[in-house]
Length: 478
Image 1 (spheres, rainbow, N blue to C red):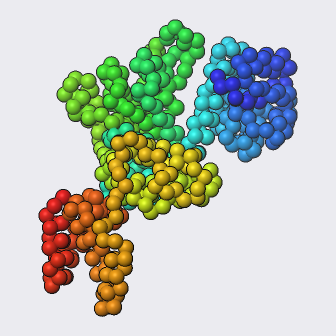
Image 2: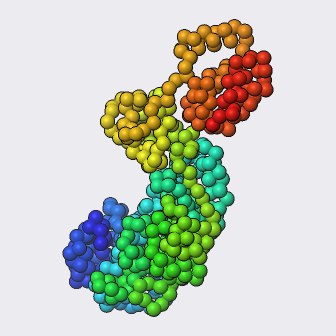
Image 3: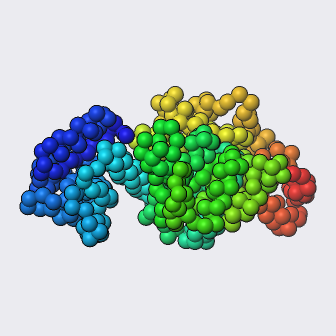
């Protein structure tokens, strides 16, 4: 149980109240007591509790009435109700009033601890989802998903099409490309956005524990299972379960996951009863799953269940036009409230990097640069690139005075801005030896735009032999 948790215990029976307070204090939890519903409302008005544990039958205001008042006063605090007069009718009434859970007296200590732990988990998930929802709604047209490259525009369009459905999605891409960001964006732009988004890293949890984490367990299922526990499938009920690094899941657990996807029900470890679940599955991996299938490490039938809608996130080195937008987002995220900038030369350097760790490595670089310098604008010298990084892109061969003179001559004869743009593009292509990837990075445009410019110049400037030859030579190289 989280030691930072704060619980309000409400019961007119002093002995019961003190017993419960002692039970939770022994576990390091901060507890406040109230002898009536009125006293509980006064405490809740002054303090925000993680969970309220209340008796139902009390003099004056009942526990069910207290639930209704607390829902208006502290809507994020789940309420667990207790009563010695447990009936189906009172249970239904309690749930309709908005209670999170319901237990009957007398109860074992493990039962009340389990109920409060479930309520704490529920409250923590609700807070996390509210934070994520706010982040998605406040960072742009499609939340945290940042990028203007054709590849990112295609991903955004696909997300907008499939987000409202319940179809399973498999996201593939190198580590650090933002697969979890894609998963969160799918969830928060779909019909399940008000329900939980529950992520789990299949690599971070040992194989022996992952089954219990996913499906839950009953009391006594294994050594140390002192109380029953709901799994992540039940916590994600109505929402989305994100299975990150699904390619690392063992074959035995893959078979059980396949059955859940087929039957939409789970069986807790050690249990005999199944539980229906309504969960959308989004999975992600940096592995080549068809190759894993060929090697016998991944089930082909599970792959087809997960791969209903495939989304491939390309590495950052294949979409350098997304670097400026990502840099701007990371400057805001790690600028500690200060407005910070990156010089055009430093941005050109960042665009030219291979970013083997993708957006995660770029964010780490920006965060480190901001920590190491107090300058408002980060220059090339302020960018802490790792060893073996790409050098600073060289400027076009023509010197600034020569270029100024050329621009003055062109202006004097009435050249248009587009013609000047085409001339400069030809200079950069000549400087890079016709390398369109390098030229597009220097110019800040994608390769499709570069091809169009070269073709247009060849059509529209037939009389200028030198520039036509430059463009023709460049069009033949890549």
